[in-house]
Image (tube, rainbow, N blue to C red; front, side, top):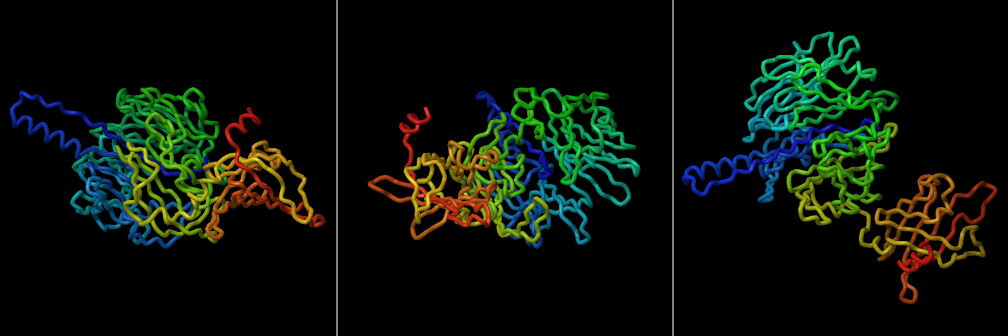
Length: 559
């Protein structure tokens, strides 16, 4: 798996319901109702992500005022926002919390947001923004994580005197601190509601520790004794609040493209000495059903049992994604999918970003925040002069913020910021619909007496995901499964919608148009083939007419 994503700590706080006793005194009922209202106000979703919901407001960086000067490899602009704004779900109003420079993930703790900004020297600085918009400069460093109950936050402080991990409580006071000695490597791994977990590396020996209130360090175990070698990075963290166990994915990166070469899944009990246990070194079918040896697992709990999946839970993705990442734009397009709390994939919006629009619309992130979901989509321009290896470069134009109700299941999204999202889609969704289905050839359309050496009984399928392939796989199926696949776009001729396809393996194209004959819709398909050699200057394309296949005809021919 390419190292192309940022790990986010997604948080969901369970609301406790308060039952009112009808015989209680009126003032007691009032106090209990106020307590319930306060719980609802303080409920937090998506903490540590790019969209964080507190009460009925959703907070995110303002991308409309950002001044992005440099192209982005992979088309990711989440780190380029400026300030913090909020969207009120009840009124639809968008308000400014602060214009202060800050970007990246947002962490909510103690009625304030923590974020970072880059100063004139290029150094990362941490700031704290209260819900009243008051700014406090914390110092150089980055925000490492936040606890599930939003009561503790971990900061990596890059002080000149002593680099360290600082854990603060809701009041902003120090809860505990881990100093980095000059000869030891120190890395943050995770944060529970009472302990911070971190790793130390000295002389190639990697050890895992935890620390709670009182700065008491607890040795959990040695990672480098579990059969994995080299430097390790904590790529995923999950804490089970029921049994107090913490789970981790530690990966070793290497090679020319900095990809995962090895990984382990372990567990430990923060605060419990020598509690580190190896769950699996590499792939394990029992806890990783549906994954392959090359997939790095994402941790999840299903009815108290540890399972590993392909996507993070309660996130939105596109059907053509690359390892759950929204980078590498040419791999990312299609339906908008939701990975629910059980790891099941459901389609939210069909054909959300069409194939032909994948180079100017790039989904940045999608978060489920309670009963609503929010998606950020960047409008971009390709900048091929700044490409690097597999990574495509893009220039920023605009950011769309979209809202989707999770309960209504409508195949649409409301744009709350950024302008007309549908107008930015060039693919003709309505014009393409009549093409979808299975088609069977009636005859070749011969020109100048030329008739290609192909089957006269072709069957093709045009899918709602903008793909065309030959069903019998006999025409172009000799060079692997993808040699039979044409990616489709739309074009316009007068008031007609045409389809244009490209086969990346063979480098050939096709075009299609619809016409009506005796009340029946027909398809004219032309395939532009490559000449085999300079000595073969003959016609390099063929054209045929097709009729749409009924269910009955399909059943008779194919059973």
